[in-house]
Length: 262
Length: 305
Image (tube, rainbow over all chains, first blue to last red):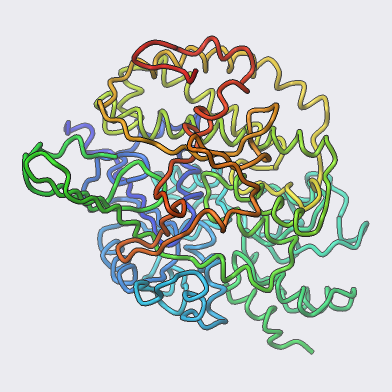
């Protein structure tokens, strides 16, 4: 390694229980990938490179949720190795779709899938990285937005806070000039309580937001659930609305369990 | 797989604890004795997320969005499988236009995913690099073209599905919204360039040094009477399998082995088989359009007869 290269900020990308989509967002930066790789030292990113080097790292990007004993201890080692640790995507920030096991008997679930449940080592819960170690930032989305991911890396290297808005999808939706799918067509939409960042894709495709960017800042998910029920959506459907990719995020749990609902 | 850097031994074991440049997480164990392979274990330690269980009790409309999350590199494949399974169960016939647009979405995913696998995950091993970035330094023209091809695949996904990873447009019975004809027409020029480049690239890839190792493969893929198969057809193999998808469980069995979280699928009474692009290519080569004649075809790298 040349001395010039060694001074570059070192980045590590780590995978837990996940679909690979968030780390793939880095490889999907077709126009920026080569320049990014020149600006930083990608020291550990197994999906991209067999050149896997030990820490410490300046930035650690963690994809996925914690679902095994091994991963529950591995995240502590990674935290020690990373100056800045960022959870990327719904699995890392909220437990992901696999957190649906948190309301069920995961042993029974394992037996639905595997002929030999005794071979499988998995925890009863799927939990976000922040339940295990302190983290420096959470980048939302299922998957994350690759623009926001690039902004996150640039901002961290420049020592500033990433410009990632925490307002709701409604803001992006109005700005894009979409007609509100709820008001105009009565379609259930989680946009009012979901964090912006996707570009209001679902309303632009004539469907309601399904909340893949997780709760916006100070979301009133309970009132949104109440409104959906008042509009005639069934209780089961409202529970499912809030039990998807960010189900274990507290505001989604409040809404799906109807905590505080009148 | 990155075993090339391991020292060659006549006897002993090769252990790769964390395989690089693959989808998901796996480890490899190979036991050698007097240059003969005694045992191979591919250990997929990727933690189980239990999709088969978590889909229970969900509305059928949610299946395409949920199953997409099985894999961020091939979400379209899971969306297509789930909508087709549900449509078959409900007896829904889709509009011919929906069928064509689904083929296009899926083709976009093939372009993106196959370029990713060929150039970013596999080519570095054949050319002696640790990753695509190192490869790009020595082969900037190849790398730029590969990235442009990959971007085109992602562009098709985004045009039809709103985003390249976990597209949002696929619905049981059709699409939430279809693209404007004018936007589709804009793809034509780039696709013409891409076809040209893909045929040239095939020549470049055929020139790689491949290990002299062939097995008696059983290739399994869909087969359609008149098209290169994407979404429909019968399940066929080069060893006489020819069944409807509904007969899958009569002919295939998924086994659970102790060392891996991924189930092993075998043909009943025959054993392992190969799926994917290579199987499709070998079984349906003649269904490719006439430009297939531009593929390399030599004694070393022969197209199927």
